[in-house]
Image (cartoon, rainbow, N blue to C red; front, side):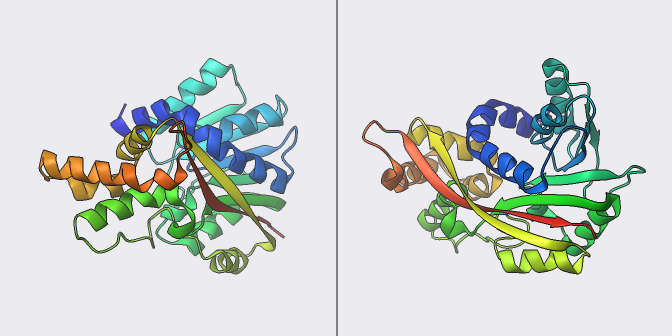
Length: 268
C-alpha cells in the first residue's frame, strides 16, 4: 500500500464529513434509486461508490474505477468489510475506459479536474452510458473560493518568495470555469446540463491538524518545502497556522467553507 492511500484512509472520516454533501448532491441530481447500474470514476478508496451501492440495493450494481492499484485495494477491503456484494472495483484509467458493459448512471466526485483531455474523456463516458442515462460530476470552484485547498499552498509560496502556485490545468481548480465545463459536456454530446453550486465545510480540531492534513495530502504544499532547512520549514508551517486564524473559533476549531459545483446531464 502506498503512502497516499494510507493517508486517505487516515483522513477519510474528516474528508467524508465534508465532501459527503457533494455525493448526496450528485445522487439527487441523477435520481439514484434501487436497481440502478452505476459507474464511479476516480473512486479513490471507494467513494461515492460504496454509498451508492447501499442506495441501489441488491438489485443494482456499482463499479468503481481508479488508476491507483493501492487505492483500489483499499476500496475492495472496505466493500468486503461492509458486506457489500453489489460493489466491484477495478484499476482503470478514466481517460481510456475499456468497459464492455453500459450503465444507467455515471458519477465522478472531484476526479475529472486531473484529466489531460476533458472533452475526449467525456466522450468516452458518453459511450458507456445507456441512452437516457445520467451523469453527475462535482468539482471545486476557484482557489479564492476554496481555502481548504489553496491557503497552505499560497502561503508557502509567499513565505518563500515564489510566484503564486499554479491553479489551472491538472490542479483541483482546473474546472472552476463552470460555464466552460458545462459547454464541454454539451460538446461531448450530453443534453439538459444542470448546474448546482454547493458549500462544503471542512472542520479541523486545530490549526496544527489542518497543517498536518495538507502535509499528508497536498504535494503542491509539500513540494516547495523539499530541500529547505528545518528552520525554513518551521517558518512556513507557522505562517500557515497564522493564516488560518480568520477561520478559527475561540476554542481553536477551524471551520473553512469552500465552494463547489455539481453538474448533471443526460445522454440523449
